[in-house]
Length: 208
Length: 208
View 1 (cartoon, helix red, strand yellow):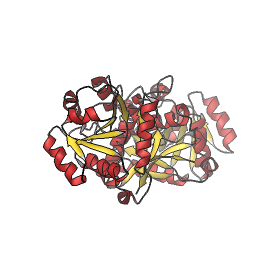
View 2 (cartoon, rainbow over the protein chains, first blue to last red; view 1 turned 90 degrees about the vertical axis):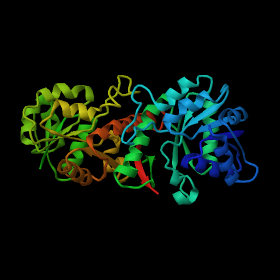
View 3 (cartoon, each protein chain N blue to C red; view 1 turned 180 degrees about the horizontal axis):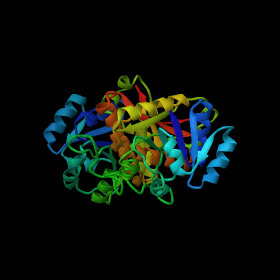
View 4 (cartoon, helix red, strand yellow; view 1 turned 60 degrees about the horizontal axis):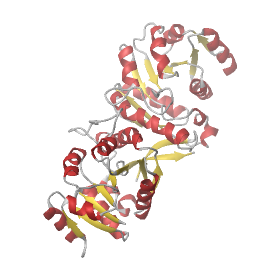
């Protein structure tokens, strides 16, 4: 199982470090291949890197570690996505981060699925702040990751990936539930930034 | 501080029992005053009850323990709401409970505020299932109650109410954050019912 990570920002870099640390076969992609190559070199010897289409071609799972607004353009460069699992980790935030640009009757995840109908989109990780990706950043806690999607096999693969890096996968139903999960991500942004709790909070469902 | 509870369903009855148990001055309202009187008699000696306008007139805080779809008609009977704090506990669910009828650019709480501009609406309790209201139903746990509103004094009063019945009030920002809190309530319905966890789950924000 080869995992392509498109994007070398805080989330992409954090997931890449965790996944390589867990022994996954990771490949780094970026629209600017030089950026992918530079980050891969920093990540460790022998980590492959390249442009978007090149890494997508090699991967089984593709993590779109990009701002929502950059995803449509990036997917245009992705080539054939048939059979690929796309993990959407985005929160489709407004420019000032205080709201969402899509919601209620759609979601970022569903918009991405519509842009890439031959792929299988799975929503995950949008409620985890980048500083909480490393185990030491979360004091070793297995924070919950909400996984929504319409394909059970793809969700199972993403659950395994989530578990492999020390998080607790939580089945959150069909991809359309991203309409609820993305507002949860936005509320997390409000708690973390606008309401002063800091990027050290995360939502969880507790069982009484 | 007199608290009117409009509605004698699972949430209204549960909140009424908790609040009277905590020593609050509670009055029960219903569009059918006979139903309010019957429930008040069941609740305990000396609990006042009446029609909507009568109880609103006497109250400082009014809990709208009604399905979202019933609130507009009920507010038409409420009379003068000037200076009243209205607590909206609703999730504006579709007929099959799988989605929301309002969201993204508005919320139930904001719609109610628009219907009652002279009142102060505060969102609370929409992520707590009725079976989790009694302390024994939640094993004594202080579940989080997310409180959104635009008036700090009103939010403070609602926080005190929340604390008085054994829950943990969490400041969730302005009333417009109901756009995120209501999808959290809907995701809670998905976890509780559609995804099989049962009505014994609740969302919480954890601090790492």
